[in-house]
Length: 494
Image (cartoon, rainbow, N blue to C red; front, top):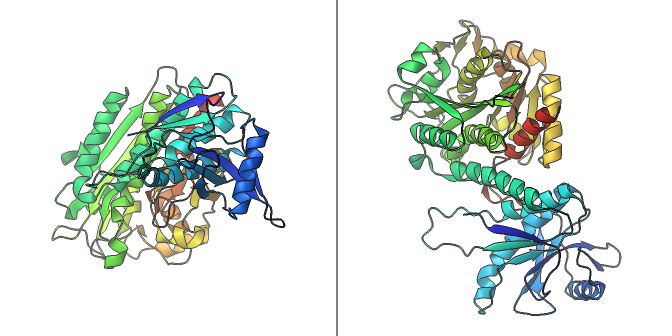
């Protein structure tokens, strides 16, 4: 359930759960309050109170004390060193997370702290949207499997002088709902979300928002020569699927295909993962969830662009029917691949999705996947890697910058492709360990032909195993959904 949100120009009372930004001066340790509250005397009082308790927090974190006006309510001080859109987004998210935590504590004292009031400094519509997005994303909770539900805020109020905020509110809610959808799907255990389940959800959601959907399963996979999806899913009790979801408005004059890795659970196959590495492998379908949500967002925003999502769905399990190391599969483009690592399965299913997508001759194709552990080694746990055709790679990175999602452009050095050479087939599915993220990109490059293309590896930031920060919760993050939607909007403007 999404918390409701309201934008007001004036507060009836400052005696409320109140979120402001703070910046602590390094030398004096004086706390500077950053807020759009017009009452300078009250802001000075807040500064004095926060300085007295030694309040200090970085961007993405918060500090909580009783309000100087009314101790029944919390004052939420959120780290804010500058007022760019992403800083405001992070500060708003951190503030709402703190408000969620305070809810139970303050309710024990018979105080109702909902709604939380956010009073962060801003002047422009894009800053307001960032605050609204951060607040909504920070309020997310996944409680489907918890008997004792966590206390939840019912409402967020944002103090703002920006005129006509209604469209900004609607856009922020739409984007947050799309991120929630990705997070919910990724957080759901594989027992309750197998390839058939995810395909059924995609079909139902497509119908809800005026998109067309088609599922390739069983004999369809053989007919279309979808060798990778069929091979990876062969060991599971739930057969694999390829799902096509299309938003095709009549006025569209540009087309983008989005291809997502949808491994609903990854045991590694016969190249079996260690037990500790198998934990959280329910998340290996994040790419598929993301391209589905991005396409549905294009429909909900009524973007004048054709968007086609390809969800490559399979469960990588071990059984008598599983694909083995040394097996060879042949794709619809005639390319044969020797399997030397069944745990490098994501690229095998993405190859099918890329071939099907490119056969329709889109103007560009983007794939997204939790593809390689090497991406985490290279870029850490909060940064996505973008590879592919230079102009598309750059455009996606620029969209990520606008959306406030950390991403970095990476090369595809041709010399690394030598590690994919096979003695008996056209290529192997896995190469040497050095540059593993780039080697995976080079593998995928064989399946896009001349179509302008970008490959996004989100293995690090797709799932947060550490503490929540900013608007990012522990667990599924929904990373790069906002980037893809921004990229689609940019193409409409261009």
